[in-house]
Amino acid sequence: MIDTENLSKQFGSHTAVDRLTLHIGEGEVFGFLGPNGAGKTTTVRMLTCLIGPTQGRATVMGYEVGKDSQSIRRHVGLLTETPGMYDRLSALKNLTIYAELYEVPDVPGQVEKYLRLLGLWERRQDAAGTFSKGMKQKLAIARALLHEPKILFLDEPTAGLDPEAAKLVRDFILEVKAQGRTIFLTTHNLDEADRLCDRVAVFNQRLRVIDTPQGLRQEMYGRQVVFHLADTAVPYQPTLQNLPYINRLEAIDNKLVVALDDPETHNPELIRLLVSAGANIQFVGELRHSLEDIYLRLVNES
Amino acid sequence: MKKIRTIIGKEWAEVFKNRLVLFSVIFLPLMLTILPLATIWGMSRFPASASSSVSTEEIEFFGDLCVGLTENECVMVYTLSLYTLLFMILPVMIPVTIAAYSIVGEKATRSLEPLLATPITDIELLTGKAIAAIVPAILATWLAYFVYAIGAVIMLGAELALAYVFAPVWVLAIFVVGPLMTFLSVSIAIMVSARVTDPRVAEQLSGLVVLPIILLLVGQSVGWVVVSRDMIYLIGVIVLILDVVLGFITVKSFQRETILTQWK
Ligand SMILES: Nc1ncnc2c1ncn2[C@@H]1O[C@H](COP(=O)(O)OP(=O)(O)O)[C@@H](O)[C@H]1O
Ligand SMILES: [Mg+2]
Image 1 (cartoon, protein in one colour):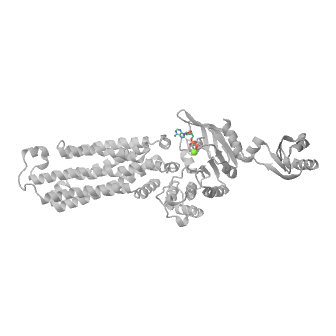
Image 2 (cartoon, helix red, strand yellow):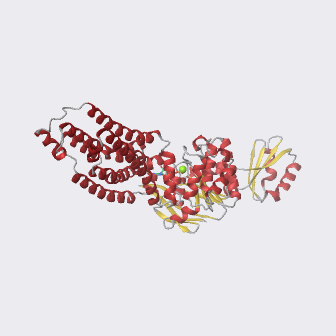
Image 3 (cartoon, each protein chain N blue to C red):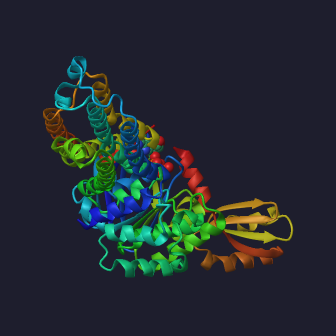
């Protein structure tokens, strides 16, 4: 659905996006992760034909950015970084304007459908400016969906929202995802990317890495199992030392941290060995690295 | 075409909730209608020297304006032509407020980016914004002129009023040159609006388009120029040419990317 090849954007001498190459499939929720100033908004603006690339090329739904811009605009939805509602106009009026601009066949029907979906039908005559931040953001997402685009671009959809409003918006995104749309979501919130996205790219001017959230964890750290013992773990380290399938072994206080490729197969044996060596096992668990660890490692590497 | 209508509707829905705009669309024409009427009223109540004929110096000053009139009538007619010229400020001033906000206003509220992401063309957007500013300006001008004319007929009598307030040259000025000027000032205001980052700056800069008219007004009131029919024709032609040129430049210079990414 979205393919880019060495897509770049230069502002004067400053390179905001440097040779980005991506392939995003249909129905995928793709997280574009990066710190402030990474070039996320610039990338979204290029892909939605608001600004032109200075180098490289991109196609969206088979249409070429810069050539078939009008077709792309017709077929994608965009939630901009700031919602940019007409605050003085009612929710109904805001959506109606956009439905008309997007040439929606049944304007009143489509507007009503989304206002009801958002639970805003009763408040349709209220000025958009009177809505809470979270509601406004949902209204802005609905505005981007009026023409039922196959691809939805969401630029930091939960930035600046309080946790409750952010959850409201995130749940709405999950609903949209369930309808099978392709979503390109930028965020600097790792937890959000982890929860919403099928794949994530860590990006900071250049593409650092791209994988599923789970894949990223494995790639960076492998899989790790922790054994919590009742007393200090050091004496039991030799018990497991020379097993061929263990990649790494570490004893910290009362914990044994074991890195191995296939814990499902080998954990039972490890437990048996430890128990027969006299260890009192309290818990066994998998150590999950948060996306944050990975992200920080990648972003700071540059 | 439908999108142009959408933009016009949106502009009106939004802009007329703005006090500043309402002020300029209502207050300015109102003032320019009341002021001349009050002056005529005052003059007709306190005639200077009822029947003395026009002196030589005065003939020099007023040119062929006063041929065959009493001094009192001459002063009145002169005052009227001054005010009618003042009326020409309306079609220039009223749309400036609306048009000056048109692009930079949307930039300030961040609504420009989602708008430009829709499949609307530059021409559709600019036409919608221009019409939204032009139509109320022209209507307000005509309405004000209509009220002024009726007042003049009542106070001066139909004959004098028809000869001077409704003189063909002024009808031409108000109904043809006026709208042409409106288009010009809207083009300029939109162009300025697309280039600045602060709505107030846009308004102040665009407001400068009224200067030539003020100059003309000052010129006439100190006797440098007398606005004649030929002069109105000349102004009309010049404005028409400027309309074409500036309209073209406004559309050509509308660069979405530059407008969107202007960096402080
Ligand atoms: N119009 C512009 N002119 C100059 N520099 C810009 C412009 N827009 C963005 N930048 C720069 O490009 C970089 C990327 O910006 P942006 O895409 O907004 O980042 P993000 O959305 O990831 O926070 C930043 O360093 C920013 O300063
Ligand atoms: Mg951004």
